Image (tube, rainbow, N blue to C red; front, top):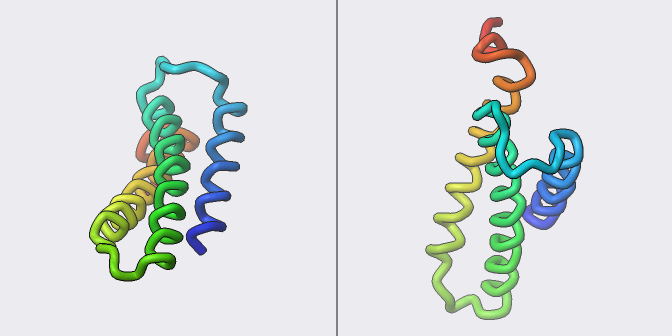
Length: 97
């Protein structure tokens, strides 16, 4: 699941850069945060795959860094989804049921 998730994050980040344009900064702070958080999620996903593979080769190694990054990744993906909804639906309107 981690490998598929990391590959999906890379594809989503790649397509997001095409959709939003190749700008390092944006006038809209939500879009800029969404852009760079998505890029970071793709990068950290690769790091997590590397750490998981390393642990399989040497199970005696500590998994503390892996578990901390995995927890932070879960939080980051939740924030990323919230920011995407905020950007596409105009503020907090996407929370009105």
